[in-house]
Length: 224
Image 1 (cartoon, rainbow, N blue to C red):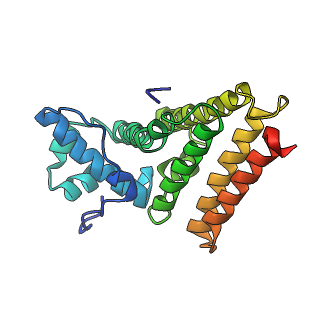
Image 2: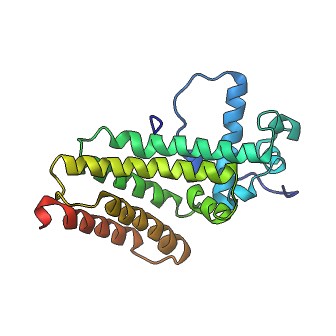
Image 3: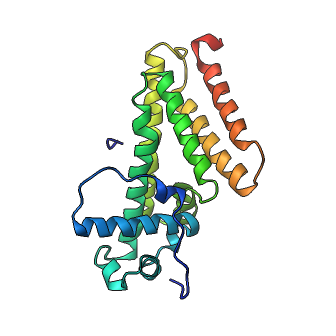
């Protein structure tokens, strides 16, 4: 993984996705402008989905001309893909990189889940681009779907790697099914989005956290 338009629209609010600090980097003016556009695009996509992105809506949101936005993203598809890549990069910065500072094995796997849950909690009001994008593009082959699927697969591979290391460290039982563990963990995240965001079920976050600990207990050396 990488080191992991409607007239009269009001400017979109900065969502949890857009509030995540972008990686520190020295930017030229053109890059700075592109990042400003991506910030606005992330906020818009969090509220309206990738399908809600348009050059016109972003021009209105950023106070730029349509031609100015178009100069940075030559098409709506390129804009959508760029938003996916930026979202994933910020996801890495917030969830993945802090976790890999933890010890190999269960401490790292637990940190990945805890960071992921923290982000989910922040996104309950705005929504997750990966999840909304999967709904919009699940049956629509093409570059946007490919970019979404690739980002999710890379992230899930990182979770699987952490679980594999836990097994190699002897912290999970020898016959632990690492892919099953990752499947269940991913299922918890999807359930929280559905329960907390759509059904607005109280206690969803706490239930997911308890379920995660139950997964570890089931497969850990001390759990049998």
